[in-house]
Length: 247
View 1 (cartoon, one colour):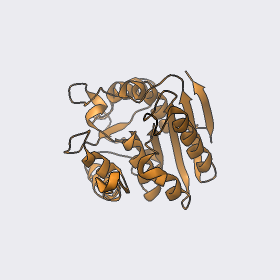
View 2 (view 1 turned 45 degrees about the vertical axis):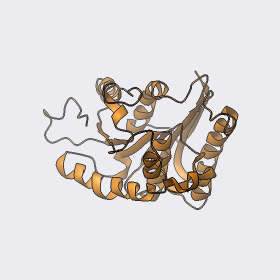
View 3 (view 1 turned 90 degrees about the vertical axis):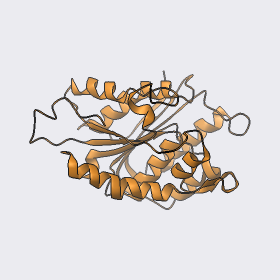
View 4 (view 1 turned 180 degrees about the horizontal axis):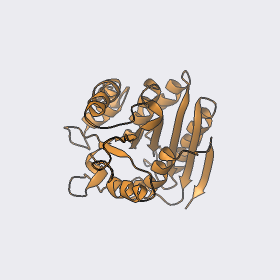
């Protein structure tokens, strides 16, 4: 967990909170299974500009590359049942167990507009799912390179029946992300564009973009995190924005 620099010296102040998936990768290369996002450094940089936030890195007692991670982050079954669809339980844990625990022990701003859920890949997928399942709890979602391929694109069918008029959504994709011939980079880009377009009329605001040459890695997501957190913490956020071919 990261606490902002003014936390101890400002006992009457409360802070917005970000819940980050794949918490091993949030703060430290030594604990990561690939590389770190530098969430603490990013939060510290934003704090120097007056934008302070509590960051909760949510980890799991699993092997990161295992089907158990796909099971916990996947709301539906996939891979012939090897991913067993426990994502609904995980989302409930975030909203109904972890957040109340954090709120009871730290000086948080508890309302949805000041509470974000952020992740990448499968972490982005479950963040998106969680935000729509618990709109009174989470008012912002950052879904970086979300695994929209999971369960044969079930997320699109799921969101087609849902709306969250107070939710702000950030999503993106790298132009070099792919899963071989099964899901090529062009399809990743098309799916992310389709997600953003279908959400335009269903949420308060959407910001999305394609990052030229970016692959599927923590190194890339680290470079995008500052803009995501800044938008979450900004009081003057635009309604919607398409960043297009960002570089």
